[in-house]
Image (cartoon, rainbow, N blue to C red; front, side):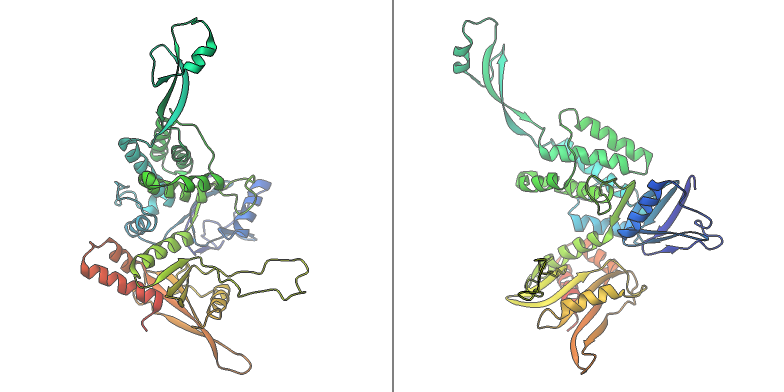
Length: 435
């Protein structure tokens, strides 16, 4: 297994057939490697199975690179690098800084994580050039050259002067703030997950420069929660960098759904479902001015335990679709973003059952799956939810394609009256259909 590289696209399976790069491979006896393969498969990040003829590797919506013993597995996005970069910028509010040249550094060549690392490095360089955010910190010091105000109370308590210094209280502008600590931790994480050696060096050097006056911190949910509470208009220039740090942390730092103290992922795998949901959420919110777009809205009260029939006092499950579209008090659409091209792949039963529940939750009786595609011929499909005994329609599930090339063109186009009209028309088509 030593030094073997396996490369596949999202939602692709490599079977151990003759001529396959995984034919004849085994996981070996190392329990850590076997445990990693199990955790990857259980979390549906990357399904790795040991068969009689070798290893079967199946990717899902996660892209990136991970090392499994002596095998390096890379999952690349199917989108063209220019399209993906444009959509990523829009989804996460990233600035149009100088990026990897697409001719020599496409995402398919350097890996998805390197594109994110490069953008973070450029964002951090821009912040350093502008000047890091600082805050005034109170300091009480004995100074030979007085600064601020003299602390006469402390001076009286000292007795006779024994040195040519005075107790002073002054305030110094200090960059050692939480937001800069998160940026520093993000750069160090970026240096650890980048595949390109030159990129690792750039991220590490920038982190060393930043770390001269900033304390280290560990990235976790609590740190990001605290940081969210401190963000305001003065920290707006940091928002793209913070978004990138969060993406890298989610892809490179999680313990595969286990306890935070568990072993972290040896590599980087990012769930494109999160990107697709963020992309659609912003596009719909920006271009449906007469509607309310609520993300991950809870359908409270849909399920309830019967009184006296909840022996373990469990909380009733609450469905939470990705988007609920309302016009005034009326819910007009329930949407779920699924990062799986359903034009070229079959519709999984669990997706259908989930959307059928959403459809039955409101009077409209419909729910829509929005899926990404680059097939220009992709068309909407509709599935009726019927009463299997008495017949008749109970609801319907709509399977609607999102043409990513069209979406990228609309997002990248210069804003004019015509493009605004076209964006709103496409947003209405995605959310409400053709009527």
